[in-house]
Amino acid sequence: MSEGVIVVGGGGGFIGGHLVAALSRDGRKVRAVDIKPKSEWYQVVPGVESVVADLKDLARCREAVDGASEVYQLAADMGGMGFIEHNKALCMLSVLTNTHMLVAAKDAGVSRFFFSSSACVYNADKQVSADVVALVEEDAYPAMPEDGYGWEKLFSERMCRHFREDYGIQARVARYHNVYGPHGTWDGGREKAPAAICRKVIHAKATGRHEIEIWGDGLQTRSFMYIDDCVKGTRAIMASEILDPINLGSSELVTINQLVSIAESIAGITLKRNYNLSAPKGVMGRNSDNTRIRAELGWEPSIPLRDGMERTYRWIESEYRAKAPR
Image: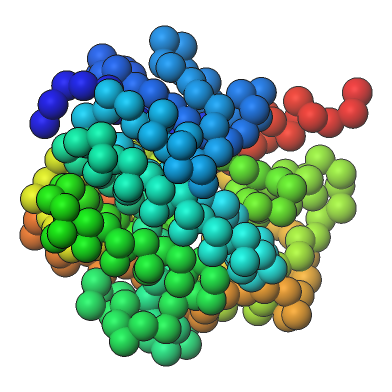
């Protein structure tokens, strides 16, 4: 691939910030673009061109990809299950960003385009049991994705396919499964389960109120991918000849109760569990089948959940302490 400018849409976000840092460490010329003021970026990497722009606007997309050889399109309005269940229209508006970035990239002659899709594209009928059968890529059809957010991702996958078929842009698509790690959202309503649980355990320990609220019955099953695996897999898929959407996730399956137990063991405490059965809980079971990524890349995400949670917990703990009243 060319050694020109690499554009990261959503470069001020959680995954985007880690990706920008990794590309920069490798000596690549990177342009990070995000709608948030720079003071709200999760990471601002020294030496990287950092641009504040709303990529729902086609004109801003054209400016963003000017001179680019590769584009990673990670920009989206999203969050954890609580956010996406209550902001379906807002999530759907990310279709504008994805479409306009594709149009701008095509017109600018960008050689490769990566789109970050999600496991939320998978048919809900295949995720009704906690005793889950891991999802293979073909399980996205017949289509019945997560309402709002999942439909946005599935539609944009098709856009990538047809832009490749009709215009020749080399689009690559990965379906992310529950990415977590340091330098991400951990409070405020957009955080995902690993960060939310870490925060709740840290707060319970700090306040001496040894109890925790768990959304649902805690029996929901999930896999969680540490950010370093996500970045490595993203870059490998971008450089590959994998044309169809592919799973990028850990296959280490746990219940939410087990995830809480991991956070408790890191904290060295045991909490009373209060189950909020009316809170958003998503599908009952979801796991990544990694047969295809192993075959294509000879690799799969492998950082153990306990190790990744330890690093995530310690980072959130430091952030929590920094925000605590003195």
